[in-house]
Every structure is written in C-alpha cells, then in structure tokens.
Image (cartoon, rainbow, N blue to C red; front, top):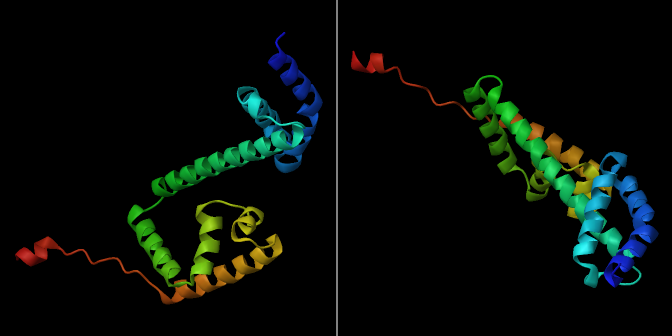
Length: 173
C-alpha cells in the first residue's frame, strides 16, 4: 500500500461517519451516501490539497457537493414543471396569463421581484432564499408574504389582452 493510499484510508476511516452525519443533518439519509461518496472521490483526486486536520475541508467539499446536487434537482423539477405547464390546457391562454404575470412582476419594486423569482422560478425554499438575500428565514417569509400580496394587487390592475384575430373572410368580402 502506498503512502497516499494509507493517508486516504486513514482519513476515510477517521472522517466518513462525521461527514455522513453532517450531510444527513442537512439533506436526509436518502442523499447522504451519494454525497459522501462524491466527497471522498474528490478528496482522493485532490489528496495533495487536503490539509490536516482533514475534517473541515471534507465538510466544505460535502457542502459544495450537496449544494450542486440541490441545484441540479431544482433545475430538473423546474424543467418538468415547465414542460407539464406547456402540455396542459390551452397554450394561448397560458401564454396570455404568463404575459400578464410578467407585466405585473415588472411593475413591482426590484426587491419584491427578486424575492418572488428566487422562490417561484429558482425553486428555492424560503430558508435557502433568505441566505441569498442575507436575512433570516423568518424575515424572508414576511417579505415573501408582502411581495405576493403586492403581486396579487398588481395582477388585479394589470391585464394583458389577447390581440384580436381578424377574420380574413370578412376583410375579403
């Protein structure tokens, strides 16, 4: 066994349980094994970069792997929702409704738009979105409630009318 193999095995034996527990506390058991495996694969590839003690570095890597995993899942879910939305119902009606929402959203203050986009379009939880804007989860939920209320009010005042389709047979007669 090489020195690198011994070092990695020792690090793995010493830290695997703690890295796994960290991931479980953040994301649950379902993803923990995958994230821990990826974390130690990265540690093996970058063994020369792993400092002593290794645990803080490994937890940072696990955090990044988990974050990337969550982002990928959010993208998959958003794409699925978008595809379902386009395949259900009257497309012209959905386009009109979407344009109305976009128009109302454009009328809101920038802070409200950002909050709504983080939750609705980026698929972030209020807790994750609160980290993005730099406030507590409780404060973010209050801001989100107020932004939704203002969007609803704006939706009541903004309408996007579908252009009238001309009847060509009437024009030709």
